[in-house]
Image 1 (cartoon, one colour):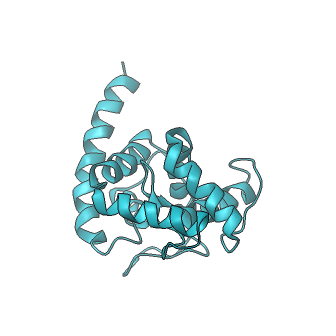
Image 2 (image 1 turned 90 degrees about the horizontal axis):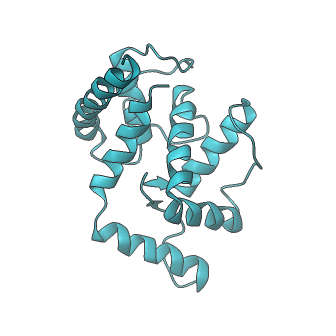
Image 3 (image 1 turned 180 degrees about the horizontal axis):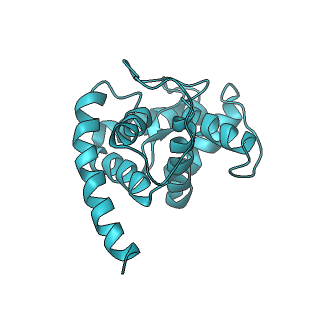
Length: 173
């Protein structure tokens, strides 16, 4: 996997963070701490990743041997809250999870939500020589929950190309 893929996903999510996201984060905390919040899970942290997606991506990657750890259940509040807190507070965990979401995405996000009109249904392996349409699909799958996924994906592809250009200079130096 190219570093630019992870950089793009996290950068794009960070630039999108706003006051509404903070309010939603507070509702999730209220739900788990006091039972008063109306939101059980949300996209949070620098990668704007939901705990449900994170758990599914981690479980998928543990199953394929890409990483190690304990499998968690997104249906259990304790697991959801634990992972959500890490995503919200631990930037390194969020970046690692972004990479795992791409590995999960390349296999079609089994068990998860796909964006409308997802064009690639057959599993592919992660490679360094992904075609542009494959990179586009992975960026779409990363933001599958976003109602504006199409416009966001095409804009973020340009950011990917910039990251890749500068990463290739360092790689080839």
